[in-house]
Image 1 (cartoon, rainbow, N blue to C red):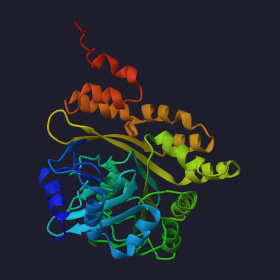
Image 2: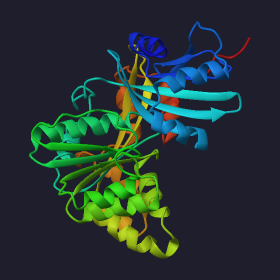
Image 3: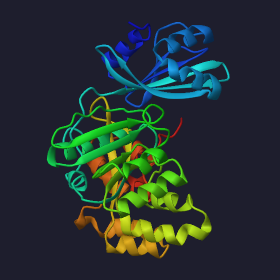
Image 4: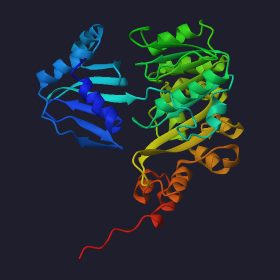
Length: 357
């Protein structure tokens, strides 16, 4: 049993989402979105390095020594899987560990709208799940893949860095590939996937031009492609995909994206006001004729107007999602205001600060 497993047990027992270990600091847990110190001694660099090196795959330690960065997954005996990130900083080594639920959640478990299940059943297209780090993007995608596994009879290929949720083949055949272990890069795996008879391709993250271009090609050629981006709204997601490309190619990419895009799911997690834990606020853009025309004509700034007027089709703005959570008493008014796009809709709902005596 690795010495770090004691920290991982504490992570599981407390229900925290993340564990942070940093040279020169006490260990910390992220509970309900906030970091809390563990009553433990300050970890010095050499001591922490010994703890971290005990669980890292030997083949990856040379990579960490050379680059100062490392990502991998670790299965703690009896405690489940963790996504591990090592990095160097001014005081020495540091690490962040994210707990991965042992059971892949369903869309219903997460309280996600039924339309996400419908998106997982589409024969082709590009579905992007976006949001800041720690907003539950991987969990949403895992639930969509679970839905497809149970309801379809197809071949699913995932390309991840590292593999987080482990899926079992049900109605579908699923092959999960890890960058660095099973393939050289996202782009290399995507090029190979097009020859491997997939129906659904999950790309853990669209990090660069080549990966984005190959994902668009896969979506255009009759595959359902699911992926993530670190963007905070549907409109900014579309801008980000286009802006990755040189100016002389952007018109071509706008045309390709207008044809292949199916949906953008932008999500963020907020602290619950009514119970421990966090709750998701979501913006959902579905690529209808109006959206496709706006992308093609480079009028992305008008996307928010479509979101406002197409609610009957299942679309929703982030602000509407926040207002629903606020009305249900699930989030605090101040948190709603902080995350809102149109803050004037919320200002009257947030109590003014008390005047000082």
